[in-house]
Image 1 (tube, rainbow, N blue to C red):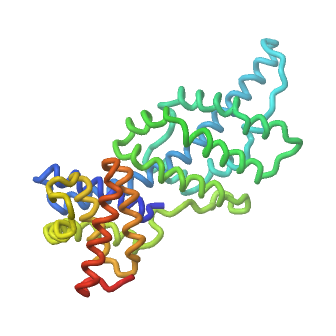
Image 2 (image 1 turned 90 degrees about the vertical axis):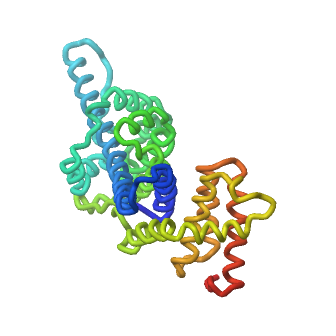
Image 3 (image 1 turned 120 degrees about the vertical axis):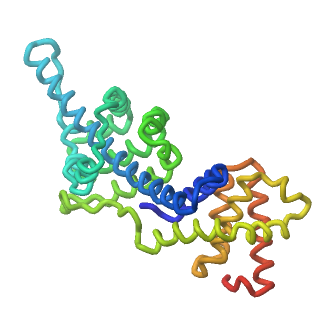
Length: 308
C-alpha cells in the first residue's frame, strides 16, 4: 500500500521538518520517516474498519426498529439487506484487519456520533435506495454498493478530517492516497477467500522500503551538491529567491535522478511536479519542471546521468 508516490510525499514533508529543526540527526529523521509511513498503513486499516462500524450500527438500528414494531411504537417493514451485507460481513472477520484491531487497539467507538451520521447519509443516498429496491442482490451487488458509498460519500466527507487529525497528525495528508487503496481493496474482495482475503500489503516489496531510506539519506547527505546543480540552472532568478519548499522538492528529485538508474527521468520529473502543485506556490510546478529538466540535460551532457 505504501507506494513510491506516498514515499516521495513523506520524504518532502520530513526533509522540510528536518531543516526546520537543525538539531535533529539523520538517524532520528529516518526513524520518523519510517514511523510516518507505518502510520499511513494504520490509516488504511482504520478506514476499512469504518465500513465495519457502519454495518454494526446498521444491525443495531434494524434490531431496534424490530423491537419497536413488537411493542407497537412503530409499524413499518424492516429490511435486513443492508445490515446483512456480505462484503462487510466478510471484512469484519478478515484476519489481517482483526490483527490490526488487536495490535493497535483501534476502533470507531469513540466516534459513534459520526458513525451514526454517516449511516444516516448512506440511508438517504441514491446508492442505498437503488440497492434496497433490487429484487435480489448478489455478493457482487453487496460489494459494489460499498464501493459506491466509499467513493461518493466517505471520500468526500470532510467531517472525517477532524476525527483523523485527533488520531494522528500524519493522517490528513495521507488520506487521499490511502482512499485509493481502500477502493482497490473493495474491488479485490472475493467471497471464496473468506477471512483469509488478503489486504493490500504494507510495502509491495523490500525494494520500496529501501527506496524510502536510500532516497531520504542521499537527498540530505548530498544537499550541497544538489543545490549547486539547481543554482547553475536557475535562469532569471536568484537561487535565494526560490521558494524554500521548491528547493527541497528539487533537491529530492535530483537525488532520485542520480540514485535510481531504473527510474526514467520523465517519471521522476512528473512525480515532483505534482508534489510541487500540492505543497508549494501556484507557480512552483513550472519552476520545478523547468529546473529539474535543465539539471537532467546538464548531467547527461556531462555523462554523469546516462539513463533515458
